[in-house]
Image 1 (cartoon, rainbow, N blue to C red):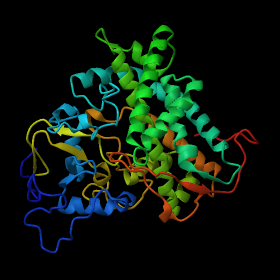
Image 2: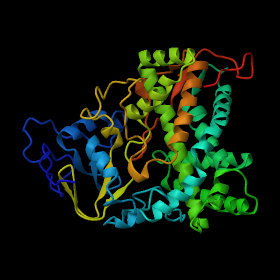
Image 3: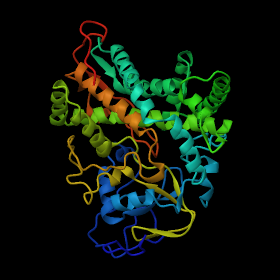
Image 4: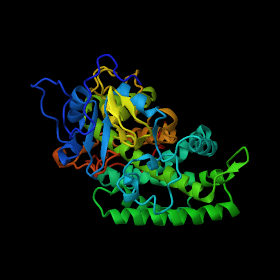
Length: 449
């Protein structure tokens, strides 16, 4: 990266306090907005607009006490996501905050689940991703589509006759949990345990941190037991595929297989919970676009659904900040010096509203064609499960809008609360109401996508 690209703002000193604008900024620049408050969580986009304009690579103190750089402009974000000098390995953090449980997934270190794709660099990352990709193929995802629709219909059947539901707890949360459990090969009788553990993991903003770590430990113990059973009796599932996968004679170790299964579960469900929840919430706040999508679906079209899910990912996506990166050497991002060992967090939500990259970035346009959003990352750490999340998102939104055509928010929008946490963005609840309908096995068979 160039140290002083044309048009870049003056550098902010590395020891500048959070909210300090660049030197030389105009005296009439408004003060820096407060970050990581409940008000910020409700609508972070005005604060991100300020950062893009006045402090695009911004040093701040996170709620955990860790100091980190926030990267908010699209061009800088895309470059940082692909910069090999920004390591995913927490060992490069100068302050070893990960060892104190202040970065990463709570409990993963104590549970010996560190050797997954979000925490390693090449060449180990290259080897593990190649092995996992062999078991996580587009063909497998395409073959899984009927099962996703079956799960979607079954969950809607559970509340369609009531005329009301909490779409997070009754729909958006269980759908990806059951889907990823099916893919991994978790027996049906064990899936409710997974649902309980996963529920504790995404309540990290509203529950005891120790509870998260205990759930992670229980999940690891179960996964090791399941891997052992799959070695003796493999099937046509993802864990069996991980065990069989090899590359030039190399196999995943038992710990590597458990860590990979864990991160596929963790990354594969919470992102989809938020994609569905945020997506429905956005459509309910933009009735013209929602009605446009409903007309398209009624006509048997799928193009607007496909572009629409991408736009929902850009507009208010499930991952607010990319996972942790650490500078392995002194470098410059957007003209700002970043010292070796400093943590860097790429703010995907800010980059995807950058007016330098997207026309009308604060406008929802479900037919937006030029939409290279960063919702699933960029570079070698691009989300491996993106095709599955898209499949689940499209199926969920299509069936909700078809089966509950007058779906509407129940209660005051101001009462909605967003979950705490640094990386993900999602609602705690999404109460809705609608005209009660029939189950999918009553009357005519519902049309498929």
